[in-house]
Length: 473
Image 1: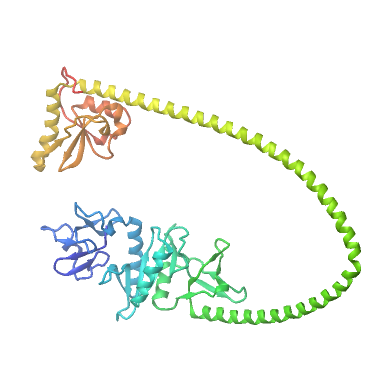
Image 2: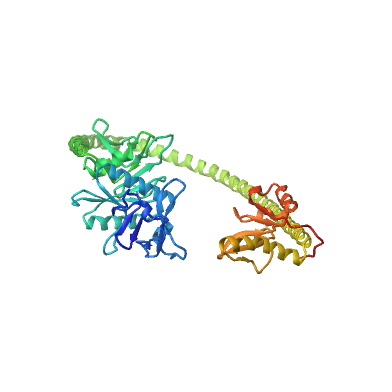
């Protein structure tokens, strides 16, 4: 899935814009005949215009797409977040372009915001997959080297790089609420002497603040890097935050006050140190006078210490003996638990083998009801409508009935699974999802439906008679 494509005549088009960014309508690229030869900007492979069940317009790769295309690995959640960022940027009266690559390939922005005069650019990166601090720092520095601002956006839990690069954490809409920012912006409170996270501003508001330079990135002074989060009532370390110039000035004033306080504290401690030296000198004089009494006390303490050590040695030996007994008991319990686990595994394997044997025997009996002629009649009944209506040839799996297809025969149309011919009633849980199944008549259809393991709408039957049959297995 991608929101951008290369048009053979007008160049790069954007599915998120009403005119595709090139004065075109969506109908001019969507389901046209002949089809417009669109290409993927990332890998150059052919793409075609599609609309999702949510009415989301996008471009999908044609069959045979290369496995190394970066856009193939992006989830739907990733694409929806990029679309939300682009929408917010445009609401702030800036130009937004999705999936933009640098001319020299050194960076690729999920959404690139540009001012109308092109003098200011900010890359907005939707980061859902894991990334190391080193990699995200290098990618950030590449943007800075090009004079491009950047903000990393994650909708997940705690990312280790949050606060080390310009970044925010967002919350998806809930209960009709819009996207909100739950980590990143903060305000400095002078009375508390700390940065306090701003409670859940709307994402659209935050992006407008950043683009209009009402909110900027700030490297927090080392003493204030523990940010208070009221919603979770805890502190988190952050090197970089988003804030205003006024709050940066407040932090500077508070730091100057703290430095003055620390200087006064240093002077007070120096006075206390000198007073302590005086007290020590007086205490030394008393020490000489009291030395004899202390020596007597020391000898008594030594004698008591040896008594305690002897008692402690006895307790230690008893503890070691008790630990050995407990360790042996634990080992025996582990061995008993392991034997029980192995027995349960053997029982489960035997049950699985019995189930497979039962299904196989049921399938043999199921196919034994038909002669080879009747099998060919059923194949023809499936293939003939496809050929007449769609000029499409049905191909039946040369391996015949297989367990993967509930002991039915796989039917392929243009090398894609079209359906399954006469799956065994006992093995319907093995059927591939969604695909229809084909049987001879209503009796066989009812036999499948009555198992309760298949939706009636998936069962297609023909009006072929029951006759004496031969085994296919």
